[in-house]
Length: 266
Image (cartoon, rainbow, N blue to C red; front, side, top):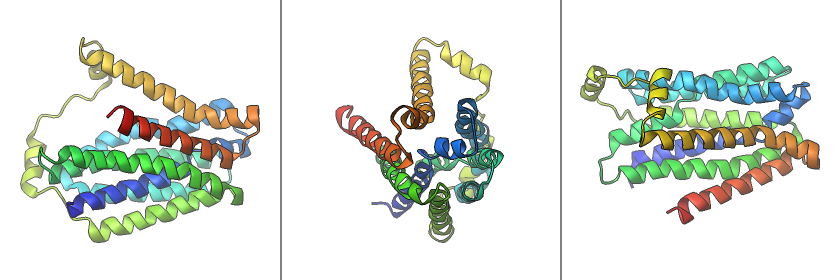
């Protein structure tokens, strides 16, 4: 196997593991500071909103300066976000943590670009599949580990996630070579940029072939993220489940998703 592909796969795995460590804990953490259901929803969605803003910017920077620097920027921002989360003593610090982490969350898109750089058409699908596998494994192990660690305090999973992210940062700095040559950077800078505006999105949603697929993906994203936000609160208030038990349930859901996507679907 291509060593660079393996390195990127491990980087994505560790990154997703750190991210998923805190997935079942955010609602409980916010509840400690007296957050309402609305504030908890805003806390979770703030990450995705800032990612929507930051990811295209990081993508363009990676085309101009290379994948490796953007990897380092993204991982460093994630590290700082986890540290703020661990040291948080108020609700607004939780928001700062998630906003910063979301703004610098370009790891997956940069990893996909990196794989596109170092593969050809014959093995590109395999490389992209490695990202999917790493993503799935991270979301199976992360909630279970995070839930288990939560018995020692909600700050402990955040600091463990920060430690994993720090290891990732060092690994990228020492062992991940740049994939984008100077010639390829010049080509990318001269290419016409696709329109990624809101108007372009609405136009795409109205197209007869692409539109239904986009609407389906949008509906799934809304439903899945709403579930991630509401389920911990629902499990706590309806069944009295703590963060550890919620983490195990989310890990089980991750296993089912991986089986369905990788097995039943093909």
